[in-house]
Amino acid sequence: MPECIPEDSVGIVQPRLVHFDQPLELSCGRTLDSYDLMVETYGELNADGSNAVLICHALSGHHHVAGYHSMDDKKPGWWDSAVGPGKPIDTNKFFVVGLNNLGGCHGSTGPNTTNPDTGKPFGPDFPIVTVEDWVESQRRLADNLGIQQWAAIVGGSLGGMQALQWSIKFPQRLRHCMVIASAPKLSAQNIAFNEVARQAISRDPQFYAGHYYENNEVPKTGLMLARMLGHITYLSADGMREKFGRDLKEGKIGFDFTPQFEVESYLRYQGERFSGEFDANTYLLMTKALDYYDPAEKFGDDLAAALSNASCQFMLVSFTTDWRFAPDRSREIVDALVEAEKQVSYAEIDAPQGHDAFLIPIPRYMEVFRAYMQRVEADTPALAAKGGR
Image (cartoon, rainbow, N blue to C red; front, side, top):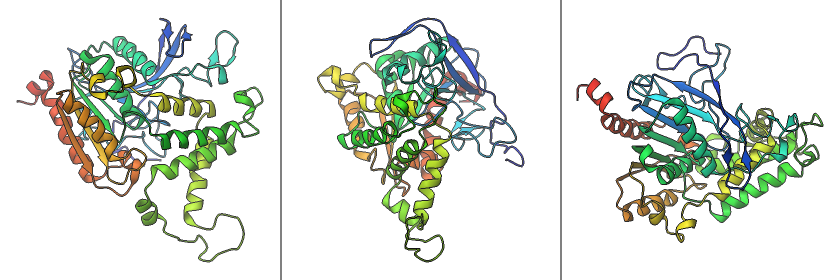
């Protein structure tokens, strides 16, 4: 629990549910007749709606990007280090929007919400959703909020894929696109990791083919294993060595199969916590959305051609020890943007934390982030005039 709210925090915030009655046709061929998105906003939208920034979340993310829901919260939102007064995404200047994507498990319509046709949770009957579907739902959210053009769309990992897709599908509706620790599509190795995680969940005896809600069960073991596997891939060898080494909890080997190394305890703790907070069917959906994303596929596998209609400016950021979304994957996007003659900047941050680095306030990373958002500010006439430029 925070003893007091920090001055650079957005403070106590309240999410709200936004309902949509217009049917949404999905890439899989199915249609959602109506749906809800859980949304959280920070700062104020200016008179001409030009200062809005959309935050797209990664696999296990959600709408609670910054601030606290109450004074009892132990931690702030998942990107509180980057969003708030005086922070890189400065809420004194920008109107920031975070949402829980369709298929999520934090309030938006998804497997754990009620199917109006049956009166029971959707469960495994919830349709497969894609990055393209999310971007369309986000476009409708922008319309609902009165935002015709985003000052910037920012996302890390799976969120970066959404930001990139915005530039392709709705090129006139954003001025800047910031893609952090991401890739234009998953490698075979990444798809393999996702499949192992899905198998861990689906083979849990408490999964019941996705109908565990009706059986008052949770496939905790499967979720734990999926999260432990994922967490290993989010860290780097250097980061794990620096954080845990081969340290023993009790200072000596116990010659049994209980967790004895600090890294074992850490992974079990992360898995236990995650299994109590996240929905198993949502985890399956999110990993499939990752697997399926490939914007170049419809353009003869030519990423430059896929990006040819983009009209915004781009900022790509990668991290040296991120082997899940390695720097060469970001450079692949940069090269395609250069070939397509787009305006692009690129920063490769030297950091030992691996893929998780995009969530950590590493000084050099925050400097680059802040500098680019100042460019976004300068490119927003209402803000530039207010700042005396």
